[in-house]
Each structure stands twice: as structure tokens, then as C-alpha cells.
Image 1: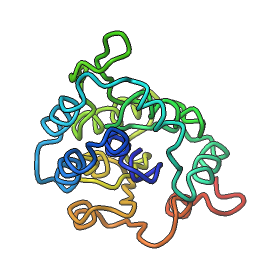
Image 2: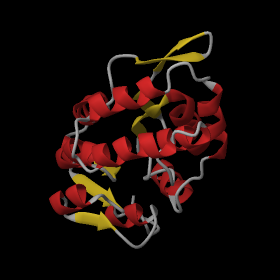
Image 3: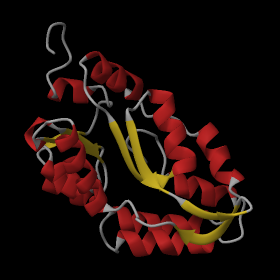
Length: 207
């Protein structure tokens, strides 16, 4: 979701609203470039937010902007009869709203631990990390009666690499260097609707 379907790292947006932007954004950047462990980075960032209200995540959900081509990509996928899944290391307060807005068939994301709508500073298990993203793809393919070669995955960061590598078509979208270097299919200058071209769904009768 973050920096792929939407144009922000949504946890960084939350931190900025709370005056913690630089502290948390530094950890986010290192995790997305594959420099530090994703799970540890996520726990560290949420620990910093202990005692803060859940409402700030809901505010970000209302304000976050979709990346260009997001609607066209989902509309094209739906018209082709594809099963669409939003898999995100972001949190339910944002990811579920984005998934509903675009009409994803499924959403898998992280969940904050809350007490009286206040963050405890902990994340509920399991954490949606690189391995779990790949596992969701594999499970969903089996559930749909498909092989992984029939699947397309799109992402931008290091934690998307196992999922993109497992899919028959893995697309790196305006990707971090570590993901860009490890993939052969890239969207670097155009928008998300270009994924329809890679899937052969950009012209009438191509389903």
C-alpha cells in the first residue's frame, strides 16, 4: 500500500502529525531500503507512539492520496475478473479504508494493540512482513485454484521482494534501489495503470 497504492509512508504521516516525523521516518527509510529488520523497525516505531490516540491514524486515512493510476488499475483488474488483494505492512485503520475505496477483494495488514482507543505501543501478531506477504500470495493462489505463475504482485520496497519473486509477474513500482536491482519488470516513469499493460489487459478483448 504505502508508496505504491498511496503516495505516502502512512506511519510517517502519523508521526509527522504528532511532531515525531524525523525520528520515525529515519527508521522507516532504513527498513524500506533493507538496511534493518522490518519487524524490529515496526515495533520500534510503534513503541515511540505509545500513549497516542488511535484517531491520528483515522485522520491520515481520510487525508492520504492515492497514487496516479490506482483507480484505473483496480477498475481494469475488476473488469478482467481478477482477484485483488491489498497486502500491507501498514495498519488496519488506513489499509482497510484504502481497500474499501478501491474495491479490493481482500486486505491483509498489521493491527495496533489498543486500550480505550489509545496505542499501547505494541503491534498484534502476526506482523505482515516480507515472509508473510509471500505466504498470503501463495495461500490466495491456492484458494483461487491458480499457480503462482498466474499471479501478479506489485511493490516498492525491500519487504516486497519475496512476494514479487514468487509471483509469475513481479512489478517494481518506483522502487527502492534494492528492489529495483533484484527485479526485471519496472514502472519508473509512468503510473500504476501501466501494470495493466504488463498483464496484457490494456486493450479491448485482452482478457
